[in-house]
Figure 1 (cartoon, one colour):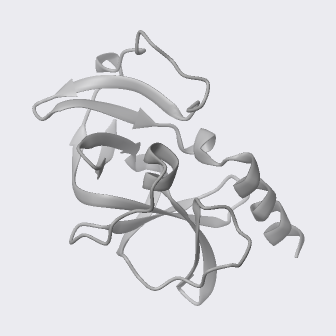
Figure 2 (figure 1 turned 120 degrees about the horizontal axis):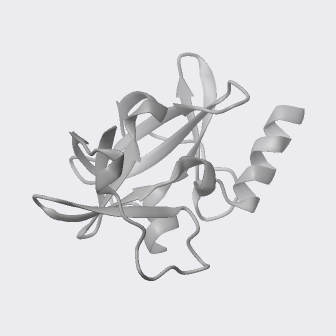
Length: 148
């Protein structure tokens, strides 16, 4: 399966490319007061507001740095709505066969969205599970958007 690689500091993560509709440059976002830290704001994309989540905030507990390779990955949710993900250092894609991913020997309850690991030329890469990335707080915001 094809994956979009991104970095959070020195760690490398893989996001399934099948989930990605578009990769766009980092842009100004409309912040929402009182939103959870991982909710970066709203992006005006193709004339519609798209909620954007900071992947680095989720995986490392810090806001994404605005580096040259920072991008927003636009995905389509099951309800047809869009959701953006800020990722640092989005440089390339890589094909990783599903058989190459292995369940890590250690699992933490605090990060259920971290999936299996694989070894690539640059070291270990950990797959992130998009459906698991939507935390309870963010899920609540999305439901509010759907209801409104």
